[in-house]
Length: 615
Image (tube, rainbow, N blue to C red; front, side):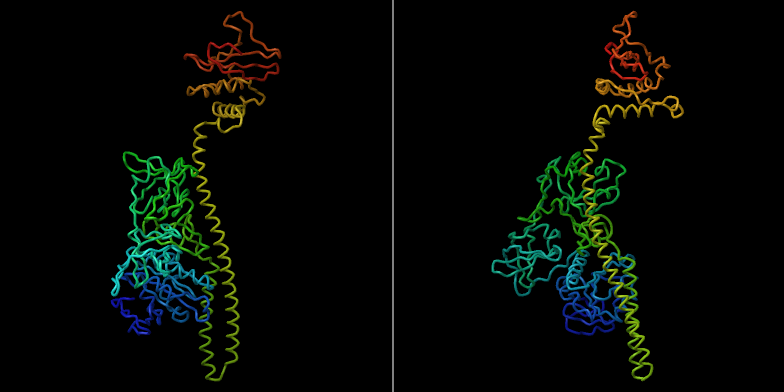
């Protein structure tokens, strides 16, 4: 499995010593006998493949991670090392940056590019505390390795047999969609491996349970090659301008988002086509790995995607299938983000898959997700783990002292008491660590819930934007239940706008003014721009008394006709009708009719044109 150019054995014999390096070769992985040498190897430049280090605790057999399963699944894609928890794991940790080691029953993948030495969160620790979490950790390590592979080494040509054409049925998916189990006609089973399928998208996104598949079976390793089923989608045949389509948010920043319609067909969508609000950031509305509904457009022949004015309830064109007879590779509501509570990750480095280190990268775990890097272990848990390791070192050193004291025959009782005290302290620290782990698990559940809420809120914000945009375009009329409420609101705003702050005390807006039943309709019925604003300004002057002092308003009694000797119009309640100018020197200039009641209050009557003398 390992090349000899790096100082490692070139054959896979059992327990073969490797010279100056502290390693022993097993059937499919390397047993580490020198943690210091392993740390030097991983930190050295020039490695050509990732390295998976699986540590095991001699006293915790139930929660050990299955190193043989990992080695079989990974094959030649990465080096696999098996490290016993103890002095050599301590030496391994001493030779690495802080927080980059493994201990207990845990595992970690170290990329060959060494970026994990500056940011250890690029290399997440997969811990196992019971049998179930050990199985989950093994699957995570396999996914971590696959996520780092951009070019799959070619498989060796079979020696004895040639691939044969077979047909089977998809029965199950495993390893987070990286494996598909196929039952053949003779009852035997084989597997489809995602890294050998083009494009390397999750298999459960391209195939369906119960689906019939046909391909070339390699009897040597029991794998099925289905690349003959690959289809080549064409945009011109899939979508028409104006269609609503599904797209995968592959990369998201504050300014734009990269949306993929199918692997190899991606477009960058600027913030202006994601939200009509220039203050919205793109990553506040879209999450890496989220499947969104977009509008497919063409401008000057070029493809353009837009998230503006998109109604999620409208008919959406189905995404294309990437394999003949397969299912649409994108589905509404099925995102490439998964919550941290599941412990699952998704690989990067392939079309339609989020980048490592991004919001949808391996450490995000969710769904999502959402929207930022995965949560780091709490300070309490990290402290407890460090204290636990320190206490284990103390116990190991004390055991050596006890052995020496036993041989010397002196001081055994006092050393035994000290050892018992340390064991009690160790028990207390272990309890602290367990409490911290429980708190972390609870925090992960809450974070998963928050990520779900965030996705729902972002989708709701996108859905409500068209309605809000229509309401703003309709003006204040759409904001009030009645025209009377709108009128009082607009009069108050006109008073606030047209009366200077220094004059507001001398020209207060009275609260006892009223409006006749026809006034609101006569005011808002004009469609010419600026008429309503002019009328509101005139109304404010009438209500505050300023119109009487403004010659341009020409306030005078309203008479039945233009004759100078005609009496002023007076209602039965004693109210007198007046007329004021809204416009001058324009065709059909507008006038304001109002009643002055016996108690001095104003009742607005109508907004009319110049030749209308009806009250």
